[in-house]
Image 1 (cartoon, rainbow, N blue to C red):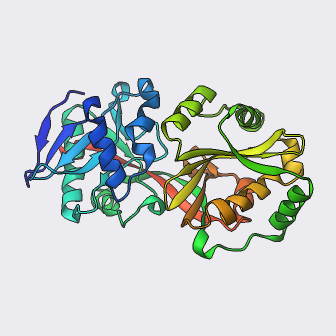
Image 2 (cartoon, rainbow, N blue to C red):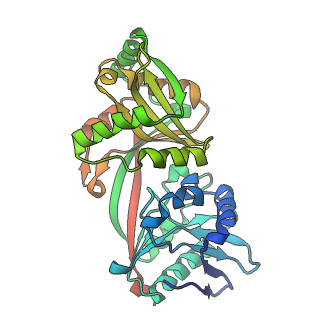
Image 3 (tube, rainbow, N blue to C red):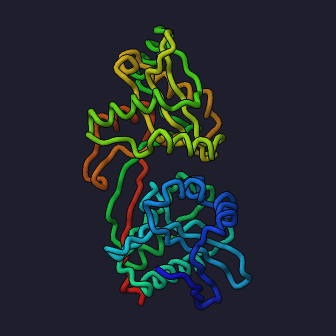
Amino acid sequence: MTGGVTEGRSNMQINRYHKEQADKWNEFIAASKNGTFLLNRNYMDYHQERFTDASLMFYDEKQRLIAVLPANYEADIATVYSHHGLTYGGLIMSRHISTLEVMEAMQMACRYYAEQGAVKMYYRPIPYIYNRYPSQEDLFFLFRNHATLEARNLSQTIYIPDAIKMNELRRRCIKKSIKAGNTISMEDDVTDFWHILDHNLRERHNVIPVHSIPELELLMSRFPDLIHLYVVKNPQGKTIAGTIVFDMGHIVHTQYIAANAEGKATGAFDHLVNHLLSTVYANRTYFDFGVSTEKGGKWLNEGLTFQKESFGARGVCYDTWSLNLSDFL
């Protein structure tokens, strides 16, 4: 795809993102009504060699940046993704953008990509729990333009201010871990935890973690206040369970969860979740465990869903929509 500027009916303009604009992009994400640090270029670009960036920046008639669209392009199938390397993407909006401006920005983006030769766009909107202010104008655009719902993954999330009480099994496991002498701490070294995670994923699903140890270390160094590893250790100081938490402000998300055989037997993870909910993040709004589905939501991991729901979590959808870009020429 080539660069360039496209102008809309109301003198709105879209520009292709270039790396020289990283600071401006990141400042906008931080001030937006629905962006998270996963859309910060220091996070997005850690694996930039895997993707051809096709992100857009939208300016109003006064040349104020009012929206950005993180995206990548796969030329061999003429398809745009927003964003293929992230759990979600979609249009990231300023607090002051209007519905009509969102509609125009989305229309312009689709037309721009179509003119560049793309035939389809897959669009992953930000799940509503991550929004700092109502931000679903893009979903209205998708409906109005006959988008197709391609995937609906289900996450389990706890509403912390009025959380459903943990079930008796979880409470017994917490007591078991405390009685066993397990302790909880925040750590910088991901190695021991990663090996537990890697073993579990290989054994259960024949896959490896999305992030390697060096990638996790890089991201944690770039976001030291926002990405944390919490582990449970047995009385001998051995790591037996843990989770990597992404701190988005009003919402925290467990990116990875893992426990070894000893950790499972002693209720270590139950102990850890209870500690995070009751102590570390007690003043937040949402605690999001992440999805328990595969194959675009066609398969539900019922055991994992039960475990998360037994902590008081309930369902939030992570959707993927598609648009035929030829409709916008």
